[in-house]
Length: 414
Length: 82
Image 1 (cartoon, one colour):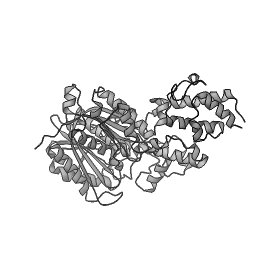
Image 2 (cartoon, chains in turn cyan, brown):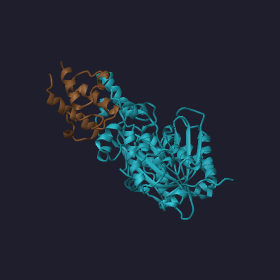
Image 3 (cartoon, chains in turn purple, cyan):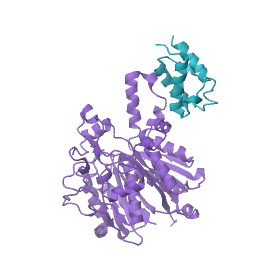
Image 4 (spheres, helix red, strand yellow):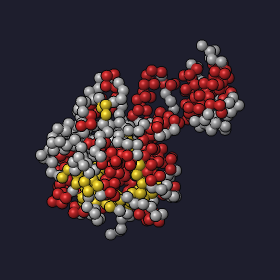
C-alpha cells in the first residue's frame, strides 16, 4: 500500500460570533458563552420578520480592515481575509514556492449582501449606477480568489459549494491537494455572511430556525428535548494545512493532523437528512478508514448538531452505529449551541474546535441542554469542558448540508 | 445646480481617494489616472459611475478612454453639466 502523505495543521484563524480571532473564540466556547443576540437594528419591524435574533459577528470588519478592502469585498470575503491573515501569521508565514501553495475557501451562499445591494441600486437608480465590482464581489469563489491573491498562491484556488458542509469539504479538498502532490501548503476553510433580512426571512419560512425570540442565547439547544431549530450565524474559519515533510523541514509547530476525509451524499431529499443516517454513517466510516484509525482511537466528536428536531438524533444514532461500543468513551460536543450555525463557515470553525480539542485535550461544552432528549445515545459534554485522555487519539468533525452533502473529517493528535 | 471646476476637482478627489486610499491632496489635475494614480480599468469604471451620480452627468463609455488625467475629467464634467 502506498503510504499516504501526512497532512498537518500549522495555523488557525477565525472571526466568529464569539470573538474576532481564534483565541477569544475558543476561550468563549470553553466558558460556554452564547454568540446569539437580538439584531442591533430595525430589521424585525421593517420587514415583519418572525425572527429577531442571530449570532452576528463579534468584531466588525471595519475595526480590522482598511476601508479600501471593505469596499472591494463582500462581507463573506472580508471575514475570510481576516481569518486568513491570522492563520497565516499563526503558521509563521511559511516560506513556500507559490506554485506549491493552494487556497480552498468555500461559502455556502456567497456574496448575498453584494447581490441584494446591487439589486436595490438597479431598482432605485438604474443600470448605470450598478458598480463594476458587483460581479467579482458577489461570485461565490470571491473569498477563495481574495485569499489566493493575498498569498500569491498558484497551485490552485477552489471554492466548493455544499451548503453547510462547505467549510469542511474545503478542508477535505485541501487535504487531497497535498496528498496528491499538487501542493505543499494549502490555506483552507469556509466563510459566511448571510445575516441579511432575505435569508433570515427565507430560513424562517423553511421552518428550520428557532423562533425563540424571547431568549436568543438559549435558542440553540442541540439534543435538548425542547430544541426547535438552528440559530443563524456568520463568520469564517481558516486553517493552514501542510504536508508533514514541509512542516518538519521548517520546524513548524503542529497542532494536529487531518488524517481522514470521508464524503458521501444522501440521494434522498433537498433539505431533510436521510432518516436512517446511511449517508452520514458512510461519510464517518470512510473518514475513519481513510485515517486508518479504529473506533477505539476516537475520543471526541464535534457534531454537526444544528439543534433541529430530527437532524441531531439521526447524527447521534449514526455516530453510535459507526463507533459501536466504543461510542461510550467518546465525548460529544455540539458547539453550534454557542456559535450558532455559520452555514458555509461552520465546518471550518468546527474543524478548528476539533483540532484545539485534541491539541489541548479539552472537549468544549454544549450549552442550553437543560433536558436532554432521552433518545440521545451518546455522552454529551454539557455545561463545562471535559478533559480528553492522553496518548495518540482521534476525533471526528461532522458537517452535513442541505442537498444531502455529508463530510466527516478525522483529526488525529500531533 | 452646476458645480464649479474647483468643486468638481474636490469631489473627484474624494471619489478617487475612497476607491484607492490615496490622500485627496494627491489627486491633482495634472495626474494621470493610470500612470500616476495606478488606477486599473475596473476602478476607473467605478470612479466614473460614482462621478456620474455625484455630479448628475453622463460620461459615455467612449469618452472614458479620453479622460487620461484628472484635469481631463474635470473639464469633461464641467462641460457635461450643460
